Amino acid sequence: MDRDAVLATYEQLVASFREGRWGEKFTYFAADATVVDGGRFFGSLDDYRSAWERWAAQHDDLPVPASVDTTVMELQMFGGVAVLTHAIDSREEPDSNDTEREIETIVFAKQPEGRWQIVHQHIAPRAD
Image 1 (cartoon, rainbow, N blue to C red):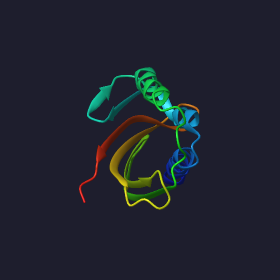
Image 2 (cartoon, one colour):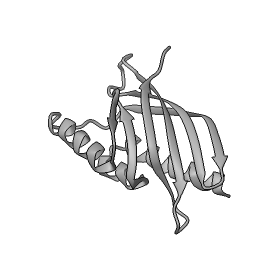
Image 3 (tube, rainbow, N blue to C red):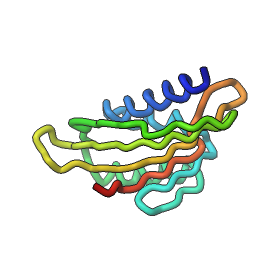
Image 4 (cartoon, rainbow, N blue to C red):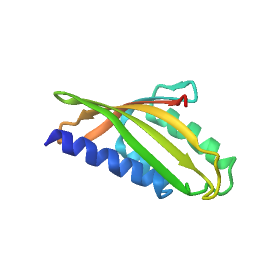
């Protein structure tokens, strides 16, 4: 049952990215979540959100990705903690061969009310 709940939260996170609902993606993170993205460590969700909003402001109109393909590589359950590793391939242009390939580790923790939230995410380029 917890495994299904983690996967459902993961699918909602990916759907928000796939559909360009940029602000929604942060609702799947705990307030004290940490993130490693682009080789930078963000010690809180506020730090990460601020950096992301600065980046988004430099790109007038954030495009909705033309395609986002994900593959769950592994989901490990440890009581109230889940570690999900997945591969993600995304393209901004439908006819482009320019695909961004990443591998991510997402750590979820079960909150007191029963909701699973991201407490850490590590995003890295994926080797071909």
